[in-house]
Image 1: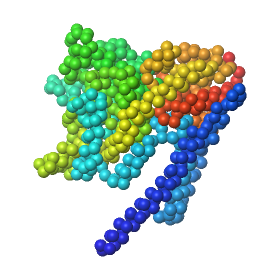
Image 2 (image 1 turned 120 degrees about the vertical axis):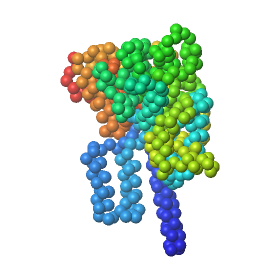
Image 3 (image 1 turned 90 degrees about the horizontal axis):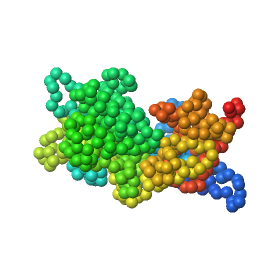
Image 4 (image 1 turned 180 degrees about the vertical axis):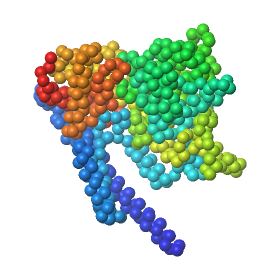
Length: 569
């Protein structure tokens, strides 16, 4: 029996090493190919040559319609049904090749579709390490090194924010981080003394351009999301032209709300980097409005309001899933996250966006220690054993009772390995390069005919303020430029569906040819039909040649749409 077990162990090790050796070679080939193709094109036109840039040789995606992809996947299932896949290296190679061939190449400089891009190699090594140890970072007993590491990483992040007595937990994505923050806030506010005959519902105020997950989370918590309804619990605050929450509108809404529901507690979500315009809500000004709404105090001094005793009737959460990474930039933090340390109660950051961690890697930080455990602890006796503390203090390192899930991947390892390897300077350079690339693209687009910027004005472009990483604009083909020359003309157009069709057609043409992956979105609160959104999170997207070629591609796609349309008015 012992010899049999030894044989199984050797077989396991040999299989692991064989597969790892093969797949690592295949992945190296894939990454080198994608990066070399992306870096080698487009080229500059020869001096005095008016020709356009060369077409991109390496595609972002070999696009196929769903029926074709379904057929490709179906072949693998057919082999499985026929029993031809069991321990078949040939079948495994075919599957890996198809995954790589038909997946989007997120390392490509023209993958500009989402708020993430190709993952940092250090983070990918961490993923392999986590898959190999294959444990759950919920208790010290199950993951001694990883639970201690997570607490130390969280401590270092809290210190970076400026919260010496803070705490935190890594979560499965930004939306989940926000959910845990909102649930924790409600518990902290509800735990206060209340009249025995009433328990007011929490109200959530968030900008009209904040992430949709805030409203979805409110519904999961049993709150009413019914715009315009008298009994609603979710309030959407208007935004200015740059996508930032309008503080004066928030002030007026809070005054009206407190007249109607004077006993209710309030959570305000301030977004640090909105999903469309990548705008930053003013944290300090938002906190000032909250203090004024809940404190009978005529002291207008900002510092006095900030340093005053924390008020028990409101909670300020900062959703920094996108822009929270500017925490690591000494030059950008002051403009983007002013007031975070002094004013926020909780802060969410997703490292799989601007910092390049593999999907997913998000962390939620709390100003005050003990909030997470108080809100989420269930003390399941089969898992959490308090008597371990009487032995060596192990139980106090448990993490599972600080969040909503039990089994949990140690994403803190990915975060720490990248931070340790890249350092503060490396992360600062990455986020600053993204901001610079966005500024350059916005300026270059504004200098071309037919491009109408959204959320940016000439004065702000000249001052480089505030920071942002998304660039949004319309491309208007030549025959339509008299009709759609300005944002105001676009906003008032009687046929917004025509402009929507143009924007979608540009994205579709670039996707189907594999030349670029962009996205598009409307801004309903600004009465703007869908426009192009270019997310410049990739470290490979900042090259000037690529920016110029991208604008060329957009122009070509827009003009191709135009010639197929009836004559412009």
